[in-house]
Image (cartoon, rainbow, N blue to C red; front, top):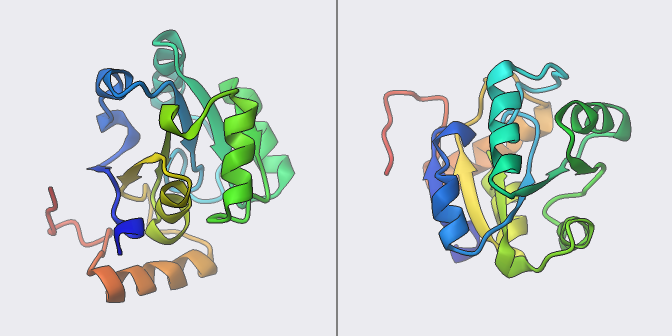
Length: 169
């Protein structure tokens, strides 16, 4: 179960303390898209997200989007944000995480994985030995496969991210 325990839990990417990551010698961020950065299946970039990415870049962070989505949408989002990307990632397979490290010319010790799913994002990052950050999903709308994974997360870990009355630390 340790492979499914994130190193850090925050409500959203906007709650991530970038200075804390820098103190941990983390300079690269591998980020999920759907329900981590944007609502599911959306190609819209909010001003808040744009500003956060620009701040991260200004603070010296490299960013690579890592998504199980197809190329068209992932490429479009990466172009809008000015970041690297990997599509059809087959998370939580190690190969795509290693490719992200290679693209950013770094090692696992200097990278953090940020995502909203334990069984893909967090598991993949943990399998590579990276620092992992779990966020709550942005929206309840999701791909049917993700809904199944969330149900499994709920059964195994009592994680129900859409029950807003629940508080975790």
